[in-house]
Length: 199
Ligand SMILES: [Zn+2]
Image (cartoon, rainbow, N blue to C red):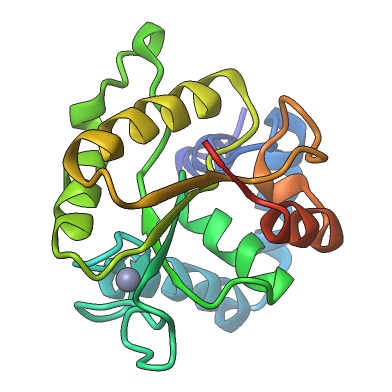
């Protein structure tokens, strides 16, 4: 129905989350109508982000150098680490302005059914960080979902083994159960963070 390059664009766009076939087609036609400059700015932005953005060598947050903005910030507390599933969760927690510590991004949640085991996440790297002795508290802020809760329990048990003197806390209840952190509003998430309790 379409010339092969147009079909290719529609196919690639339809792979984006939340974009179905109809929307992909609309976006493709929008780009075809747009000026060359405008359309190529989008292509360049995608290329640049893939070429320049990697993972922080300390916390595995997104970074445009070896270390992310937060790990490079000397004003951030070193004795509290907040463990999250994805880099987008760092943004959600930063928006609350309730947290002054540092992060550790796991890269997902445990889900044996989907083949996600502890080795697939940055869990060993977390244990390595706390072994350094600087860390006093680890806030486990995985999502309040089945996989997020399973991950939190696994990490809490593991931390008790590698560093028994560390306080492990979990976000207070009040977050919508079954939803991801990124959907929680700042006020709710801020309260959950402020009211965190030991597990
Ligand atoms: Zn970092």
